[in-house]
Image (cartoon, helix red, strand yellow):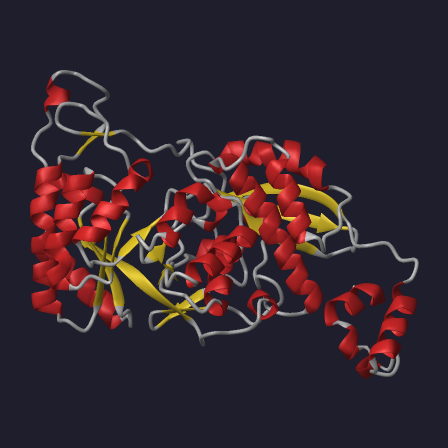
Length: 443
């Protein structure tokens, strides 16, 4: 890093400490001006996508290279269900857009990249934009020689409290899974009876007898799930106690009136939150849901557009905002969303699944470390292959996520190791899930 870039990272007040001049405002300003006069700003030289799959998910990492040799940033643009479309958007469009621009101007870059496609707020372009945006923040932290959360104002907590996933095909399996998570130090545990919607409880579907759809299509009926879920909460509360926080994900698989009745029934078990009880297409029902139950509601995993979350927050219809940060365009809009939510006492619960890259998890955690209205974070456990590809990935201990005290996002990529893990043959789309008559069920 050359002298000018170091000066930009440390600020005027520290110039005197380097022996470059007196520390009075006029003296430091004059010294800085002399030191940087005639030098060109640091520019973006290339933006490219890197693909890898160390844990089966199709990860897309965006690398932003700069005119300073060896200085680059990493961002996450992972869209597991459509990864190659993001790769094209980055390599064929964002690269050309970003080259030659000043790496310092993150807000300006985001605003203009956001509208460069004219139409916006779709998952493909938002993920591509997220990769660019996160990488620029990573560079900013590296130039300042600070972890990213320090640039935002420092810590609000010592580590990131997380919840873990427990599941089982029957109550005993689920109870054993919950106890295992408690032994690992987790105080917040999401409970699911089998897969989303407890589809294994449904009877033989009629659509398969009629040869409708494909033999591999899944099946879920609402009634078995609606009957089993309160019993699931009752069993875990009675066997594992009242000192743990229980979460549950409806995953938008039931109708609005069914969701209202379910949450009313679950009140007695004091859930920490119920996630995604309605689909984004049914946002208008949240005012009825809120009026009927005091169960905390988490929403937003499928959101891409501010018009989806702003009314829910400002009308105080949800308690946790659950967006997937790469899907909304990256770190820049997520910071603004967190600030909006704070004023309405809505807490964060950023989506952090296994098909998000370690770079994306690090971005979640840096924001979690700083914001006042942090709620909870989804935990993640990386295998050895993932840690080889991504040195510096966040770690878990006693139910908390910890970040390395390293500049920027604190994470790197080993491209040689990444190349050893190509995408799986299956392109990654969600397979159909149907009611017994063949009607599609939306996630």
